[in-house]
Length: 601
Image 1 (cartoon, rainbow, N blue to C red):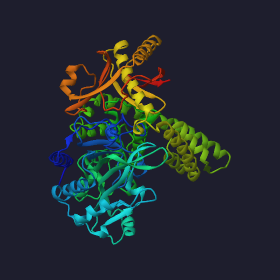
Image 2 (image 1 turned 180 degrees about the vertical axis):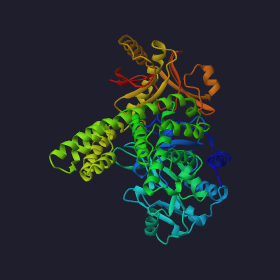
Image 3 (image 1 turned 45 degrees about the vertical axis):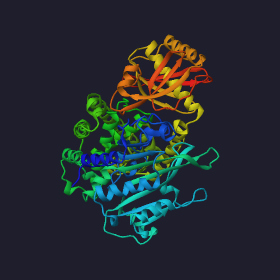
Image 4 (image 1 turned 135 degrees about the vertical axis):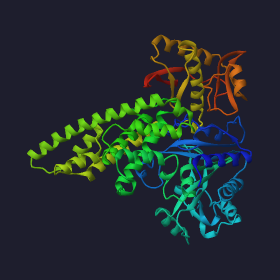
């Protein structure tokens, strides 16, 4: 048997022995990739370095990273899908490439974890009109003794990564699948079929950032090629222990047990639907705790990360009702999550008081929503009864969902109890149209950004450093960055403050920033230890997110320093030609957190 603690240590120790520097897990809210709401993989915090910036700890890196993914949210509740998970990763920044990456993966799986090579299959990129078939990886796998009939070539949708934005680094990948069941596939077609049936579980992915996709859609070979790998911690622990699902691992089982105990049911007697609800509650409340406990201070809201957080909590409450939990319960489960995850991620323990308050507040608010929605639904049904109609139409159900946050399952359940049916097909059609519009808006909102490494985003990144320095100068010397999001059009900067900026403060900040830009200052970079950075007067939140060495960006002119901050980059080399600095909007995004929108005209 192996625990998550043991696997994390084995993985980190193995890659340290291969010359990799250990970097800490970054925030769940990405700073360098505005194309996504959450950190979905270990590579997101490394975007600047994958784009060519020099990492202070060298060209070989490794870590375990907390991640959130919502693209598979409808799959959560099955055996393998999770919203929050931990990713073990290692990176080569222009150092080793395909051969060494695959050999490291194979060595760790077979020698460190003891997996027989007969017990896993691999996939490689099949090639298309733009890129040739991945024959290098294929030959390496064959040389390691993986039989040809267990090496499968799949298209771009399966074996290709990126770019993160519209343009940038991308490339083929090779994925490793563990045989959950003792079945040997005889062809790629059979592999695809058996994989869908759950015979295999993907446990590791080696991505080879070999190309740069241009605005014209061309794929050009990168001079400096990178490797980005990822191994799902929970999945690997599950398969190594012989579990048929991730909810048996030590970071999830106590949470699941806590949910079942509150439901006053027994695991052995749960129906299939009840088990799915228990798993959804387990996953969603763990994800909620990890978001709420993050240093960026995200709270439930109707926009961006706060909207996803609200959805996690409310979906948990709805499923709790389905298994008989009708009293307040989210704080009870949150306490179990903190006990498990707090020792691994200290920020969870540190922020638990705020997190308990927010999750309880959201549960209370949603309980009121349920009451209001029920009252409105009963009025609708009374009207239908008088009209001798026995079906609630799609619009009626969707209005309840959109206006009151009333779940369709609750609408259906109440209607059934009172002898009514619901046009659920019509509801889902309306919901799909709504989601497509929302998705299109989100894609427009988050397209581009630092992942594109454009001149505009680089200038705006430097502008945020000026804003940060100006906040300390004119507002509060203790102001620190709580989050940022940069696209080609604007920069958003979150900072700690109880009050919004006054018109006078905005004027002072703008005038000072434009004065610095007008001086045509140099923007220089240097690498030093954290202690040296502190002594030099560099600004940054000195916590566990930094490694042993950091990069310092300084904005200066003739020895006069205007800004000196720890940052990954990228930045302009001079403020000349940056444009006119302007604050166009500000708002409150969380308790004690304000957000400013910055543009360069």
